[in-house]
Image (cartoon, rainbow, N blue to C red; front, top):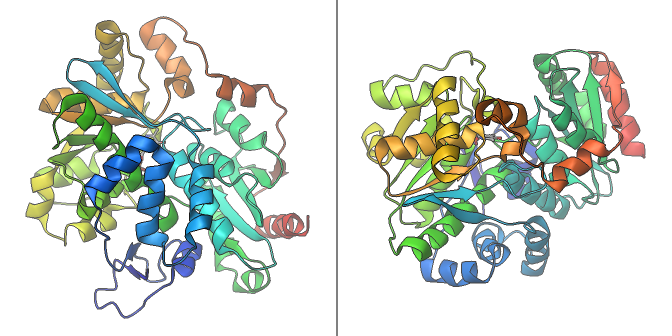
Length: 433
Ligand SMILES: *Cc1c(COP(=O)(O)O)cnc(C)c1O
């Protein structure tokens, strides 16, 4: 499969899978998309999904990556990546959610990060270690760290701002050890991002160190996120007998929902999508007014969706051929204040005894508002937001064992001031051992 940039309308610059995956963002600033969208056979999807998530994912991964990687390697990688649950849960009468938080970091990003980690392991055949360099404000770093843990030939250098990530997030990044090398930067998230950018722009450094990024626009994180839409669909059909769901997606950078749109373009039958947002409602506003006005984000309690300029917006427009009417025919927007999110959490608990995290509660509220027939995606486990949940529901809930384990372990990190020279020295040290 060949990949093109969303901005390369004439298709003049083809990239191999390896090139697209190692670059992340296309050189012209666009996002990579596959040359063609493979068509699925839904009967095959259903029979594979009845066996297991991994079995279904092997079929779908083969459609994209089968020309690039031998089937046996892909299969081993997929089974290794997807060793956790993905389940449609009935919250109340006619109310379903697809829980995507049963992976090692308790958020849906595990689906993309674990797949990407495995694929980079397959793609990097050079003798030199590949360094995956990434900056995080919390959740991405933990998903990438867990997803790339123990992948042969790869070192992960993850930068996070000192004092600006939660204790739990810091534990998730700093207790793995091995090939995961966390750097605690004495600065804020913007400093971390600027450092990463400076390293990527230092061509002299990059000529002797093999370094790549793993941010959420990467094709290897985006494509596998389309797989769980198929799985959710099969389970929803089994539960309801219906075949045309509307799917509600709590959204920030819109990588998740555009992966759903990719699934739809591959042949997944859906009635439409709803993009749920918090107060950062750039896309819902665009769907209402036709005016796209990206801006600074504001802080909310659903902080993984605090995005003012969604990085996948271009991919979404690409998938709909830049056609506003086609897009609004299949996509509705919805936004919530913090107070509305908290009310949704409380209502779900009071009415159904279901505990939801703040991001997923936007999905519930949107489903209710539109009276949708379908399901919403639950993107994180409530235990990741236990202070908010305890305040809202007036009680504490058990923390899953997997989270407790990380919290008990000793943290190991490399403390660093905001200095490119220090970071480059440290990266070289990581490559050596
Ligand atoms: C990253 C994240 C989102 C937003 O997903 P996008 O793909 O950026 O739209 C929503 N909820 C949680 C819990 C997340 O971690």
